Length: 619
Image (cartoon, rainbow, N blue to C red; front, side, top):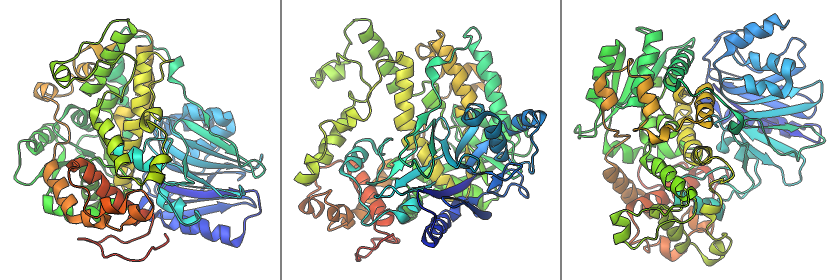
C-alpha cells in the first residue's frame, strides 16, 4: 500500500516539474511512511511513498522488468500475486523480488492492457512503457484506491496523485469548490463520481485505464470491466459464495506484517473475523468501537464474546462525545474529499488504534450490505421497479398516503427519497443567485440516473456502487485508514466474489427476493454462532445527535464570512445568523464542508475549538 504521484508532459521535464512531483510525493507521507522513490524520463516522472506490507526488504518501488524499460508505482495490493508469479515464471519471466506489484510489470509485458483482467486486488497504478514511450494509468474495478488527475490549462502537462490534497499543489490558484460539488455534497453527503470537489480536478473512473503519450495528453479513460457479460452456473449459489469468501479471507489475511480486523457485533465483520482466524489461528487481532456509558447500541460485548470464541486478541476503543467534537479538525485534515457520513469517526479511531498497537493491515466487513442486498431501501427499490416493469401500479404505504405523496410511475432509485430532495432544495436556497443559476435543474438526479438499458439488478447495483459504495464508503475507508498508515482490506468486495455472484444473478439467481442477506447468511451458517447470524441488523449506531449537535455548536460560527461565503457558495446574510430552521444533519454537512474547504482549499490549519479568522492561504 502506497501513495503514488507523477506527471507526463509534452515538453521535456524542467527542474521545476521534477521539484513539483517531489513536493506532491512528500504530501503523501502518511500513505507510505516506510520509504520513497521516483523514476523519470525526458517526458514523464513517477513517484511513490511506500507502506511495506509484502516483501518488506525487496518490494521498494519503483519496480522494473528485466530490461529496465518498464517501470511501475502502485497503490494497493494484488492478492493473487503468488499464482500470477508462478504462471509468469513458467512463461520465462524473471523476478527480482517477491513483491505483489512486480507481477503487474511482467503481466503487462506478457498480456499488455489485458493484464488488468487478471489482477485480483485493489490498485491504482502508473506504468511507464519506455519501449513505446507510453504512460498507463489504471484503477481497480470497484474503485477501492483513488487516482486524481489535473490537466494544465495549456494542455502541456497531466499530473496525477493518490490524493486531492497532493495534486492540488500544482493546480493554479485560486482553488475553488464548484457549485455542482457544493449542491451534490449537501444533497448526498458526498460528491458522487465522476464529479470532483475542485474545478479543474478529475478522477480516473473505477474499472478504467488511461493511455497517454507526450504527443497525446488529451486521451480519455477506457473501461476494461463489464459485469453484463459475465455468466455463472446458479445451481449452487451458497456453496460457490462460501468457497470464494473463504479463499478471499485467506488471501487478504496474508501479509508480512501483523493483521487485524475491525469487528462489530454484526454478520459482515463477524464472518470476516471467523474465516480469517480459521486460516491464521492465533495471529489475528480484533478492534471494536464502543461509546461512553455503553448505550444499547454499543456492541462491544457481542464482539468480545465472538473474539473469545475465535481465540483472537481483542481491543476495545471507546469514543467519547467530547473527544469527537474536539478532534473534528483532525478528522477533516484526514478527509481528503468531503464525506458527511458519521461513520468516519469510527473508521478513523479504529485505524488509529490498530496502527498504535502495531497492526498496519486492517480487515473490514464493508461491502456486505452493499453487495448482498442488506439495505432495506435498496430491496424496496428493486421491488418497486420490478412492479413498474411488469406494468402494475406501485402500492403506497399508509404513511406515504397520509403525507399525500404520489406513487412513482417511472423507474428510479434516489428520486423517491425526501431527505435527498430536501438537501438539494435547501442547498439551492442558501446559495447566491449567480451560483444557483449555474446549476442545472435536478442536477443530483441527472448525475445519478438508473440505467434502464441494463437488467434491473445490474442497473441498481451499478448505481449503488458508483455513488454510495464508491464515493462514500470506499473513499471513507481509504482516507481514514491511510491517514494512520494502515491498509484497509475488504474480503466482501473481492473482485472474484463480485464477478461470480453477479454472474449467477445474470443467469437467473434473484437473491434480493430472499430474506435479509440470504446468500451471505446461508454461506456462513457453519462458520458463525447462530445468535450472530440471527442478530437484527444494527449498523454503526453512535450517539449521532449528541455528536452532531456538539460539532455544529462548536464550529458553526466559522460560516460567517467563511470560506464558502468567500467562494460565492453561501449568501453572507445566511451564513451570519440566517440558518435557523434547517435540520441538524444539514447544518452538520454545512459545517463539515466549511471546515474541509478551509483546510483543503485555503490551507488553514484547523485547531481545537474555533480557528481564528486569517487571510487566504494558498495550499
